[in-house]
Structures are given as C-alpha cells and as structure tokens.
Length: 130
Image (cartoon, rainbow, N blue to C red; front, side):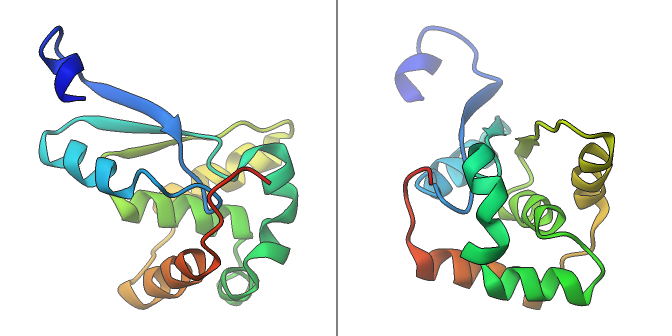
C-alpha cells in the first residue's frame, strides 16, 4: 500500500476477506487509520464457503439463530464491526439473499456477540477458501 500511495492517491483496497480468510486484519486496521476503504469480496468464502458457513461456525450459527438472523447476516455484521472502513461485496442469486445480507448492515452486533463470532473464527484458523 505504501508503494502504491507513492504513485497515486489510494481510496480503497479490494481483497478477499471472510471467516475462511482473515489475513488482512492488520491491513484493514492500517487502512482505517488512513481513511481508506477496504472492499471485502467473497465475504462468505465464495459459493462453497457460503454453503458451509453454518457447519463451519456452529457457535456463530447458534448466535444468529437466537437473534432470528441467518449466519450470513451475522457474518456481514461481524465484518462491518471488524473495521469502520470494511465494505463487504456480497453476491447473491436470490432477492431474499440480497435483502438478508443488506440487513447485516443494521444488525446490532454488541461487543459480546462480536467476541463470540471473532473468537470462533480465530480458533478455526482457516486461511484458505473452502
């Protein structure tokens, strides 16, 4: 990023960020300090990851269910809580999926819920696409 900034003004960085790929956590924090957006593509780990989120993250799935959410909505809320500069790029085939993911932007994720999700993701240490 520093090298790119020496050539041009950087307003955003796009990379994969999901429960299965979290290696950019430090980069997200660095970018936030400079008011640079982080565009998180494949926020559920791609199609294969999206289909297995609930199985891969049972604690997150249980938390989501207790709030009447899908696990996908909980992951969008978690990503937004990781950094104020994170913008998940969610793809969907069904209108209901689009609406559900969009609802993650207003899902109230308190510190305890964030900690539950974040800890489960960190404990899995899955750093590749499923």
